[in-house]
Image (cartoon, rainbow, N blue to C red; front, side):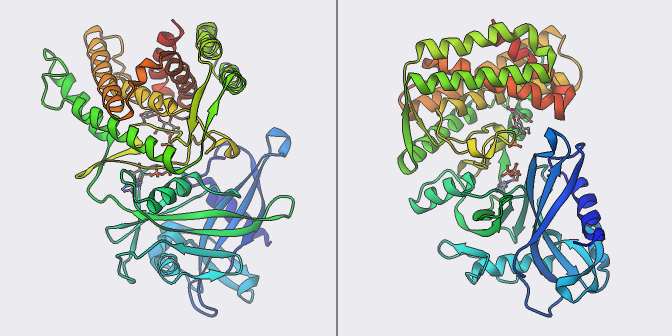
Length: 468
Ligand SMILES: Nc1ncnc2c1ncn2[C@@H]1O[C@H](COP(=O)(O)OP(=O)(O)O)[C@@H](O)[C@H]1O
Ligand SMILES: O=P(O)(O)O[C@H]1O[C@H](CO)[C@@H](O[C@H]2O[C@H](CO)[C@@H](O)[C@H](O)[C@H]2O)[C@H](O)[C@H]1O
């Protein structure tokens, strides 16, 4: 690879929100091009590069593979200046100078990603898979969604969303796995899957294997996400200093109740159509050990956790001692208010990729649905507390009291809604719920320390409460 291509890709990655290696020293190990999506001789020439990044830390053994769809132009494309990657001489295009852009911002290139699906395109190392018919015009142009995220999503017209996975892995992507099972069995509550793109590329040992690159689904054009709705309700409550949560106009408890019911339906469908299992004492010991391990790593990363470590470990000891056995199944894995979209037809759940910090091999493994319930309960706490954290008002007794009241009301409503569908209120699994909530709050302390230090007080307050 020419030095200019390496440098260009290196600098481009560093500028991207989805690049998880920001702040770490890294080199571009290789860039593996997949087949051209464009016709020979056509400009722009378009293909996906799979870029392997090697990090200098961890003895230089840590590798990530990023998907970078590129469009190569034979002259500068002024309208794409914001999406410029670099310029170099491209050997696969006869060595001519090319101006290279992020293809996801280039409408001529994204058209090929739509046509690939509509025409069931198959190339030696990549294939588009379509499920049923899709109501979309061939010439519908695309827009990149601006929401902060770890992948890149495009919307074609008003109805078709293409989520391009940035960090790619061999094997099935759990987001596609869940959406495919739901689509094949006609389940509601999630976006309808229209299809996906997968590809084959060599891994670090040179072995070829397949992995998923993108997922096409329904776009909820008029939906608002649960986090936005919840914090509007919290703002209303703070504005009405003398009223209780159930007395103000923006009371959210009805929505929380319905979200609980929807969550239970999604869990029931995952249990029906995807693998399930049962964990006995051995697996529960393993689960408690994993939670203790995560706590130890987190204390090392964020020493502010240390005073609570003993109390937090009690939650894991209780789990190991008293749970005995439990059913496990596919779950969401990173469930919070931002993963629930309120449409006119009710709540829809998105993004089944699991926790971003979790090793890929662990994602999509079976777990208790109580982990998701715990995730959402933590989210109600966040929604209630975040305005106090933003304005440094956590010490105002009256507001803190109101925040706790809002969180409790909505956590309760969610559990009741869940229990009405599942037949058992998740709060009846108190030991399990406490252990999972503790595990999530510990994860959040590290997440906030790294990404939003001003918010670290939110999970730390929960840690204090959970440590007893
Ligand atoms: N089907 C959808 N309809 C409407 N908006 C969506 C849909 N899926 C995702 N979004 C929007 O895109 C954002 C990021 O999506 P998500 O699947 O969570 O991506 P990531 O895995 O990168 O976090 C969401 O917060 C939501 O605002
Ligand atoms: O949405 P992602 O899969 O990228 O999840 C990560 O980012 C979330 C933040 O957006 C983070 O969630 C935490 O903050 C939320 C408010 O912004 C709150 O509702 C969640 O309860 C809290 O955990 C999530 O943990 C992280 O994995």
